[in-house]
Length: 253
Ligand code: MF3
Ligand code: CO
Image 1 (cartoon, rainbow, N blue to C red):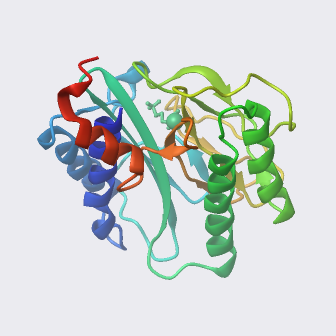
Image 2 (cartoon, rainbow, N blue to C red):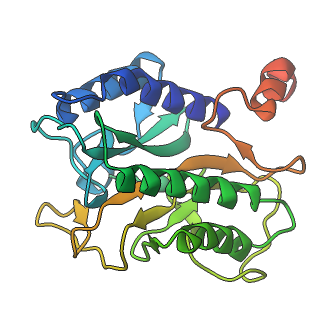
């Protein structure tokens, strides 16, 4: 999973410099897919329940699962890129929201708060804590900032499949839910809207926009619960990744 996550992160980084006005999300998808394949991975999303691309590109009021297309990005857009990789039978999943050119202060704040909520959730992902502690930490950051946590989509366990139990809601109560144990890996992924609203799904079966047109942001990491605290597998250079590389083949399983 560390290696899957490393490939996944590198593929997202490969398209980051291309995210600017004029680029199409289809172009971003093509580059991301090649970046996964060239590193020996497989795009996890492509073909999943018929999803047609390697990445989801969710612009502005689209919360998640936007399908890459031929419309160029425009200055002032925000676009969430969600990417998943399989490598040697294991999955990784991550997402980030990017500014396209200059964006409004409101959009900037929405992105900042959503990312801060992700990191608050990760900080609560300690062995011995409960899943509700993660959910509540995310919700607290979002609601203190006056934004709304999306209820229609949640994070998830991840491993051999990219959607495994448990579901990881971005709302919940401290002290509830299953105890987190070392070895559990979670895809923690707050989806946040400017205002309290619902999310629908377009006729393409995927694109999920807000009902009221509120802007939405989405950040996601694949996070391992360990006795040394949460390890963000989709971030560069985690201590866990270092240790595994150093140990090399000593642990055959
Ligand atoms: N991170 C998203 C999720 O966990 C990505 C899924 S896109 C899909 O649901 F197309 F593969 F469904
Ligand atoms: Co996910």
